[in-house]
Length: 424
Image (tube, rainbow, N blue to C red; front, side, top):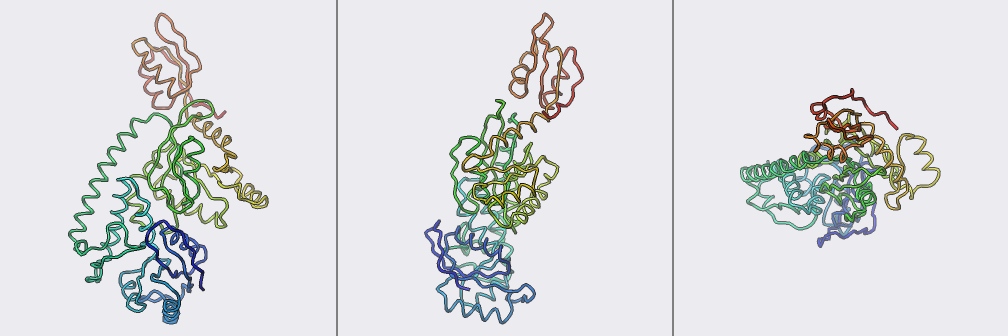
């Protein structure tokens, strides 16, 4: 069914696309992805999953419908809402005489478009080359063409890169560069002392807007899919005055290409190192439950299922009272906020502070004066309840993180047994 020329220009390339898929929500998302990539959607054709064909993906009748649509509509590109095999792409291009790309290639293209830093550019190039490498067999000289538009950004399709050995060599160099960056990042992580909070969620859930609201930063915000690829770390003060770090990460999406998950694993490591994960949800979307599960599945793949995680429903300013009432009753433990206007942020920060304080342990003892330098560390990373100076040393009672408590155990002249701080 035709859909008249919806455009979202993020690129100088203007592709007119025909979309092919089977599921409504996924097709709506594919449409958003196409607009984000700088194309326009001229039509959508749906098909049944029970009538797939190994050679052309769709059946014979649907293939004829596709051919008529390509001839009728002003399109130069067909995008399939699935991952096609190299043979299927080749067969479809021969039958339809038009460029064919799949969902994976479209997402890779958007990542290439939005990669700004050296690290994200290396990560995207690696993912694209791995995708290309898996499709070299049987492609002959087709990859030697130089193209423009959706699906051809990034490393491109030059004849040099059709040589498997050269591509493997390039991937090896990219891995080495990314490992070097990862080592630097690990050193920086070890130097951090403040508690870490990671924002995770479906793409375009409002993570950058929330980071700006909490930290009063000016991180660029765009109403498009995958606007943020690089993890951003910002310090901010909790209501009680203590500092914490919040980090924004790349958004998730259904069927996120495994090449991207692998390439961005070092960036996603920030989630694994976090003390608390804020799972941000766009409450204005109809398929909230499905998106929550998709994010949970990706987080489970990152082995963070045992981390403290909080559900945070964003964009409540866009909800009707009935919808808000339904979500609050369905998710009684969740927080409901508007990152845009600040509603609910103070309550969220108080909950974060309570969780952080619940992880502190109580220490009490006499610290010798030669270890007085630890007092500054205790003040910075903990909460001092009592501090007295005597002839023999400094009598201190404080709430501190586990690692500081372990250090103090070895330095106290005498001490009381430490205990977990109860929730306030």
